[in-house]
Length: 164
Image (cartoon, rainbow, N blue to C red; front, side):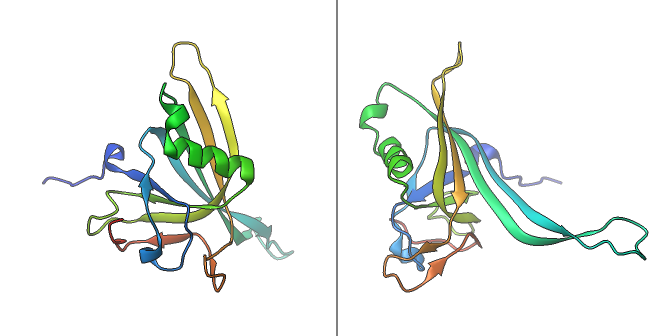
């Protein structure tokens, strides 16, 4: 029996400088030169242990989500629109919308986390024998749409945005 696994090489990371409540408001740009993409999910906890508890217990409170990836440098990075968008977003503290998807954004059935985020780490790794890379970390933010009428939180999206 064959299993149709989704391979990491088929997954995509998209970015949009426009944060909107409708998928039609996004112009998705694929971030192609990346390695080691991770969407880290977690939750803060609060203790719920009482005197009659047999075990120490907790309950979850606020959820956390963080996006991390390595952006590979090339000689063309200076004129690279994606690199310049990421760099200026970090320097100017502007929000971007990311979509860590399991396929192409214009393919039916593509799903993944959409995260309005702020770049909080843009470190440079210059390992001997390796490609120069930028270690990027994105923290989730509560963003306001371009019209200023709604807030946007991280969300799982399993619908297909229209092609841009």
